[in-house]
Image 1: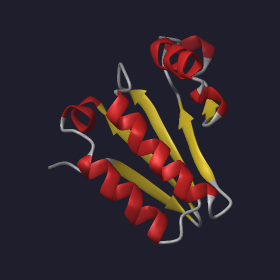
Image 2: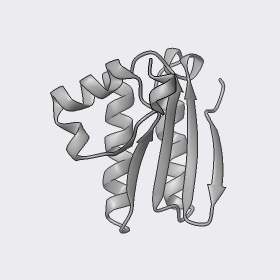
Image 3: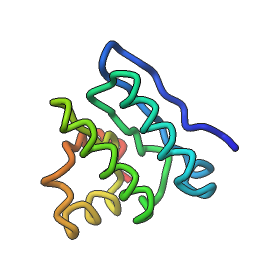
Image 4: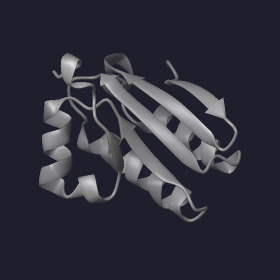
Length: 109
């Protein structure tokens, strides 16, 4: 099973999701996010530029990590979402939960 790529910067981690990560399910992602929080990470940036859609199971894993990070004064931020992901976050109200870093306008998908 492939583990999503991540980069640690002090108390922040950047996790890059791919279509392969999403297709394999969320168990590995949940474990990785849990391990990051237990290692002292307070802020997790999830780069979703490489995925077409954000499944509900992935959102649930991100919400769980967000709650754990919030308890430590941090949170989860979604980076480079496409239009469909932005619409999903708005329709579900999750744009108020997660900080969102939009993709640059020139690469709007």
